[in-house]
Length: 409
Image 1 (cartoon, rainbow, N blue to C red):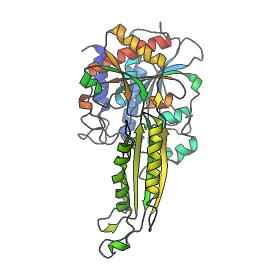
Image 2 (tube, helix red, strand yellow; image 1 turned 90 degrees about the vertical axis):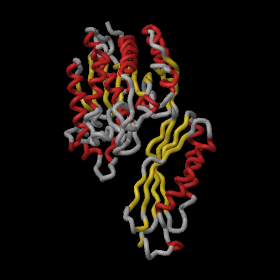
Image 3 (spheres, rainbow, N blue to C red; image 1 turned 45 degrees about the vertical axis):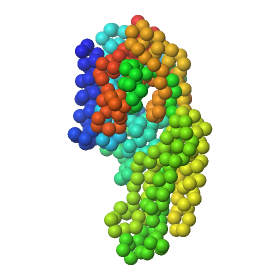
């Protein structure tokens, strides 16, 4: 195992210890105690690698290696460091570690870039605490405005500003970043699917990222006693929600192509065993490689939910996120392929069925993304695993691409 591969493995093993669910995967929610532990570790490593460290008003972490050109835009490398509940050690984290290792290789080889190199570790990509997802990157490019950010609350009613304060972060710092300060954004990520492993190919050069929308649906009925309220007199929010949810998969199947729909979160109030549920809140996630399919299914979902707004039941829909399918930079895709060939690392073109911070940055700068294989295609679970050898190969490609983009000497 070479030095680069060993450092990558060491960093991932260190970061996976910052979890609220030891032995049951990685649970690292944004602005939590575990976030603070990981944050301090990442900042310390950035400093060790000669980077100037700062945090913005969202809690995103930046480590910068200044370039020789004054006021030049940066080549940014990184990903997110939050997790889903009981997730894996590699989703997002591997991309942050890849950025750190690119910086380590710049330092190790005493490279002096013309354009600055920045390593970024972003918050709340998953949306596990505050909903919607991609919060760090959306805040950076300005599609999440200050007012909306400050109004976000978690399931316990704690706002983003309150949660940041609890771990010593300053929400008054600048959030949005001038696109002119960004020359390119590069992200390494685990595939989260089986294609690369089954093909025995270590690198996937991402051509495009799926479009997606996320909804929060609220169904309101009337609470009542489970034993004394006749069945024909009930306005049961959970039964109504269940009827809606049961029909959602068929909408995706009818649309076809690569369209998928998921209900991943459900909350029932007051959540008593002998109480008819008064309110049920659940999420709907719709994805497809073509925007027309997302729009078609979204319209059908809205019509379905509205059809249950009768007989003592009230329904409402809140759109938490909408992002169009994104094609990534043709020039950076070509650069990744060129560097892979020069390094003798086999690759293939691939599309992403998952959303990533890269798709957000593609609205304001050139973006490139590479995948490495996921064992058995598993992700968002404790069994998630990627070979550090593949990660090291991905880092070598990122490093060579970053050298070219920063014109490092």
